[in-house]
Length: 335
Image 1 (cartoon, rainbow, N blue to C red):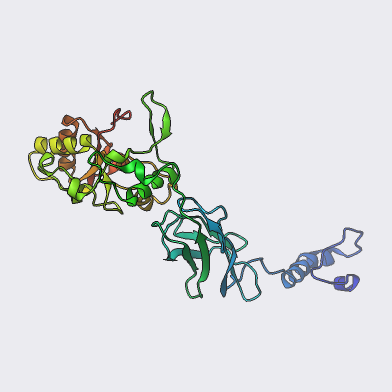
Image 2: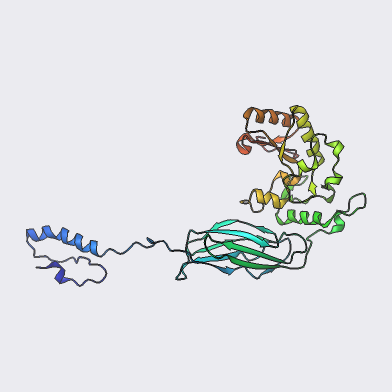
């Protein structure tokens, strides 16, 4: 008896439970026959042959018009497809600004199981920018290009008149622009009662290089206090200048500031994974002192900063290459 003669094969043969009249030798052959049959009809494992991306296609987000100082309401989405138009997962997509300026939430994203990748854009550009170009690039492929428009400038909650210093000379609109970065990035602070509130620095706190009180800071210059910002104006509080000077005096040797004031956009660039990041550098009362990677130097600078009334970030957070010191009103636990 031929066991294959009783079955019609389509994709794969499956044994039928029934009555068999084979002898003992016939039963001994069944495992071998089954193995041969099943080995010949195995289906290929899905996804065993990786698909090759051939094109990145704009899916949504291009063409929208948004207000200056706000995030785009619609995310930017691109789809990476193969020659059959099927989405390819696990592909790195690099996002960059080609014109106009502003902020992109993530510089690199990875396509999902449908071949889709996306990021967010915010129009915190220079005043007067009306069009923005953004590209999404996959290695070896033509970039997908997004074009966005920025509507008339709307200063949210501020005007240039808000920024008139005591001497009557009006501060430039860049100060208003920076203040809107604080609103856009949702930077927070503490009220007098200790409640978390939006942090909106006073215009009087902004100074430029020609306003910097050189005699009040014998050790550090305006450039040192602002070497990590995007603008020529900055928030440098009196408590920062006094505290940094006292730290230098207590330490007794020259100190190098690696990070001083950061405008909110700069803070976001430093910590891109925190989309609306906070941080004392944006409050104008924090600096990072360089240690050279030496633990004994770290401990000595920490001691000097604490003697000057600073809150000092724990070693496990700042690491040994720098000492973060800030002069916030109340230090966190462990600082």
